[in-house]
Length: 193
Image 1: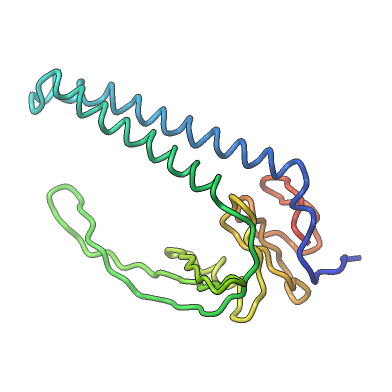
Image 2: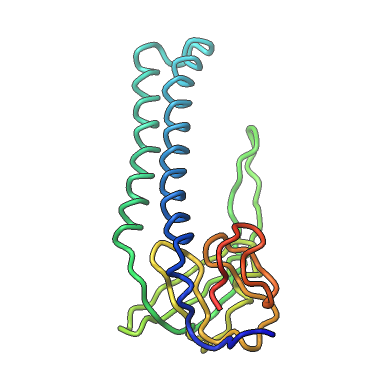
């Protein structure tokens, strides 16, 4: 039997969600440090092999780019810390056909893509846009008028009314699960229902 699927879930208080937040932060820093290390080592090697950048300037470039990776991770962490939980409503959905230039070798190519945009209005009137590039599945999960909840440090919104859904979206990893399931098939966190 499926439980009541109307209302926001208190399963967000499961310790697994806090553990997931901490692990995401940790892996963000680890990934940035790996990229920074590659830049610091790679630029001097590239400079020595190609002769384009002499030492110590190649090291300075590597340190600068590596520092940018660490700074980006720190800014993302700061953004997550300042984030709050709030409720709102889907007020608009738009689909845009876009084109961008992509360089392959010495040539530029035009690449078409689709941008899916959700507009969410918080209870205080502030409007947020959530975009998905070439990914209609999450976009299609929400309908105009849906009441939603943004949980601190997560990018997927919890729907208030899931009673008409055959699938439920995991707010942590973004995986679709059968509505009858209690835990996400991918990350194993409790589904918010």
